[in-house]
Structures are given as structure tokens and as C-alpha cells.
Length: 266
Image 1 (tube, rainbow, N blue to C red):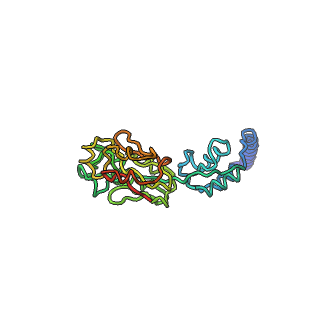
Image 2 (image 1 turned 90 degrees about the vertical axis):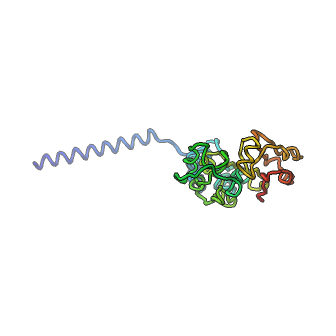
């Protein structure tokens, strides 16, 4: 190739590069979006798990929502009160006193209490097993299948399979909600950390069918509700439920339950 042609090509490439750089610099100024410095500080204060338990797409999404006033300063379930206090300081507001929440699996149908309808040999995943006839191999169609979909989703090693059902370690739980989303039976709910009495059942079957399927299943008899002076217990869709905000922790509901469905998790 001729030397002058090579020189011309180099010059043209240099000019194009310069023009492109000038254009990108101009575009960055024209389309620049101002970022509130508080947003960056909040991102640094958050734990960085990006678990989505706050309801936003990661820690950056939550930080942006807090700055816009769309989310509370205590919106991170993983960070707890300590992180809420730091975020509140950045925002110049009061942190408030939010209750610590933990996950609870509403099923007591372990391998000693509930049986199997058939042998399952598929993938060890509750979501897969739940697609089979009868909602899985468990004798109770509403019970925990025990294949650990929730365990796989938990980043904090706070949930394990014990005697065939999922059990939460409330001291390790950060209430991120990932286990709740993973459970195909929708057995997991968030309750206050200091809750003592819970209904370990989610069955909506009639009493006779429950008694055949599980030794500890709720039969919807209503004795717990009738004997609760605080009106904290209700029976809906044939299964009892305790309103933890109303519960005075007297334990009468557990004493009156003929099936031992209500348990003490103190």
C-alpha cells in the first residue's frame, strides 16, 4: 500500500475518533440525569444482598424509592433496625420502631404425622412435585412437600428440612420473603419475631378428610376461637388463624385445641 494512502487513512480514523468523542461528550451532558447524593449513600448503607425482599429491584431500586419518598427508611428487611437508623440519618428523618418479622411455615405434617399417597422419584423440588396428581405425594394436598425449594432460595441458611417439612430458624431469618415466593403451596407467612402461638396447618379440607391425612391437621372445630378472650383467633376456610397483633400469649388456644395443631414457638 502507498505511504500517502496509509497516512490519509490514519488521519481519517483520528478525525472520526475525535468527532465521536466530542459527540459522546455532548450527549452525556444533554442526557445527563442528576443523581441525588443521598441515593449513593443509602446504597452504601444497605447490605447489598439484592434479594428483592423489599419489593424493589435490588438495593439500588430501594435506595431510589426511599429518596423519592415512595419507600420507608426501614424498607430493607435484611438490614433491620441498624440499617434503618443509618438510612434515616442520611434522609434526616426518624427511623421509627418497626417490628422484626420472621418467616413461619404453616404446616406440622412431618413424616410422623402425615403419610404419602405414592412414591415420588422426580427432581427434588417442591414446585415440580406439586404439578403431579393430587398436588404431590403428600397425604395432605395442602401440606409441605419437603423437597426444599424454599431452602435453595434462602441466602441466610435460615430454613431447613426437618423430619420431612421445612422449619425456619427465626434467629437466622431476615424476612426477605424469598422462601414465601418459592413455596408452591403458599405455606409460608411473615409473623412478628416475638410471636409465641401459631397454627401449624393450612389445610382447607373438611374435618374427616383432614383426620385421615394428618395426625395434627386443623379440623376447623372452632374451640380455639370460642375460648380466646382476646378475639385473636378466627376460623376461615375450615382452618384456624391467629392474629398476632391481638394475641396476648395466654396459651388458651393451644390448651383447647384437640388436635395439637396450635404450637408454642417461644
